Length: 305
Image 1 (cartoon, rainbow, N blue to C red):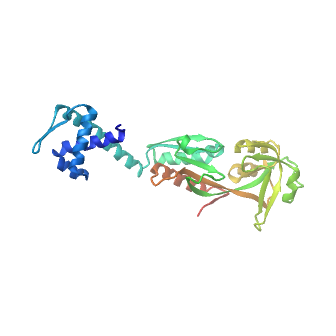
Image 2: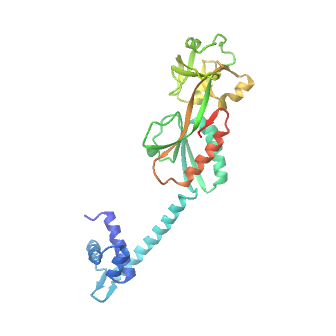
Image 3: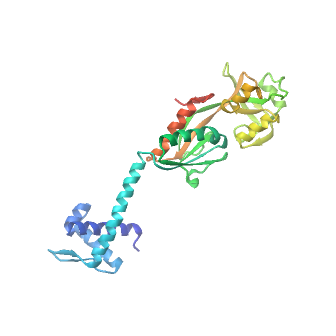
């Protein structure tokens, strides 16, 4: 049975024969032997059920059917060459459609801001942003990149760490947290959990000495959405974690207050995950560079060196 790939080889061989006018010259151009070219030409004729060329030892000319096949194959060849050129250009110049997946809170802040800068620089690229706080299957999603908070565990993907996001403990301004002076005092207070980063077990580090302590807390409420978790904190439902970029304005206005100012949670890695491979379209690298520069100027973010 002749496969589609076999047919492609046969048609390419026929085009070479038609262009050079004899089997030997076509074989030389294709880097193969004259008997191989002759066999492929016969196989193509058998496949199509018609004679494509009349040939003798000294003469070669296309039949009407061969002339029609040459015309159709040349159209296909020209379209292929144009597509090949466009594809190679795409790998060096940002163009096409960029599909991004990221967390909801980041989509409403960093990602949309980065997209604005990206579109201003590369207006020929269309951007599609999908927001989810869960794990992402890049291949199934058909996405170009995933901005991941917390780190990706899939070793088959290409991961670029942008840096670490510092996090602190906060509560609403009216929350009764005056007795919390040491990490151990947290165990008697409800936690607003953020799955899977903040849930029952907290690892705190001293901002002065780098000492680390582990604390167990009970999650009164738990969610996988950063914005939902933050809203629970604002409503006084318990103590929760937040990054400076999110809680900064409320801290400044007094709407929320910091718990244990001398301690911070372990920072969260922020990574860009793409499908592994040598060739990555320029539209991806260009966006990652813009996002990296934007986040480097964000309070509480420690860029990777």
